[in-house]
Length: 370
Image (tube, rainbow, N blue to C red; front, side):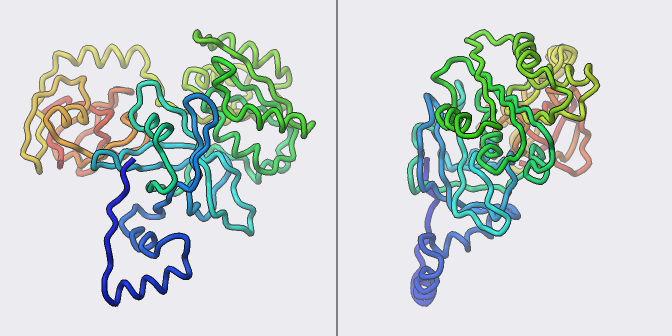
């Protein structure tokens, strides 16, 4: 990870900052002045501790913390890599502060993606003192009123989907909780020891871990959930995991006519349905001209390659993050033409607004202000 360039103040400004530093230590006053360059509500934070959780997974403790957040919410972290910021979304895994308190630090727990660029680097190389940019906490995957009066709960998590639920469990839950967690192998279970200790200490929390092996079968996972929780209709369910599992759970709860009991959070973009994949394939015959107007670069487009990839192939370096349509770091103004969302098949016509470059491809001749 690269460290952001630090200006060196001199003269009267240096003396003023020296006095101010007495009141904001251990941070620098410049950390707060630099916040004006961040998106509204965001801030810069620094890694103050790192902790290995299991193979390929680590927790970063960051400071300062957001003013407040709800258990289950997430933040975008932006990290300087090769001179450009890379952004990914991570759930906060630490408990939120009490209503009258202000947390000094907060945790994000990161699993290295098998073919990722940023997450393996964060897990492997992040060290105390590294700088990151943090967006305001967001997300609706939360327990109303901290779980008070909600009745019994069911948590269904898979893999790194445990992270937002861990924030809930580390808070103050007063409900009967059944937690079904799926993982491929035992050595990949995140927070395993802490969850075991919680189950022993709190009789209202019951936990089971189901090992799926390398071949994950969603139908078998649903069958285990129903077997372990025969009272689905009495519980509010909070589920976080890969999109195929959550899609299957939505179908099940709709079939049982209890869809209002299900609250979900996915850590991946939903897969395009077969009809949309066929539509993208048919677009191979489409030929359009893509112009990046500010850069004065023109390229041919085939209708199935994203604007972001086409820009990178042309030698440009547009801002981007997740490359999956989640973080919106790659939005650029669409000045002319029509683009198509490669996930849904929906077209967007230029009206002066922005489009996400990582998930859209040209349908007609297109001009992007880049």
